[in-house]
Amino acid sequence: MAFLLRTLATAVALWVATIVPGISLTGDAAWENVLTLIAVALIFGVINAVLKPIIKVVGCFFYILTLGLIALVVNALLFLLTGWVADQLSLPFEVDGFWPAFWGAIVVALVSWAITLALPDRERT
Image (cartoon, rainbow, N blue to C red):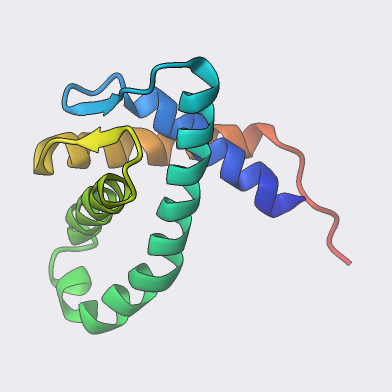
């Protein structure tokens, strides 16, 4: 259930990120857009789950050197990769370059954070 809620929260955050110029969702119907957002949220989650830990380990020196600011660039590149994978799968979700990906990643992070704050915590046993 937590996975489903996190995926839906990411899908909503991706939808909000379409306010950034250069990020677009171009489906013809509302349900197509909803399914596209869920698919892109799954892609985004897989990319972050697989690549982000590897990048953090390999680039640990750069994280320390830049006091963590490199994380903004890494997040933007992972968001750009998500847009590329969505394009390869013929999903109507487009990210037009680094700067839209940079701002889109920030929007997705903030909106996802706000949504997960509003959701109740799982009981810890």
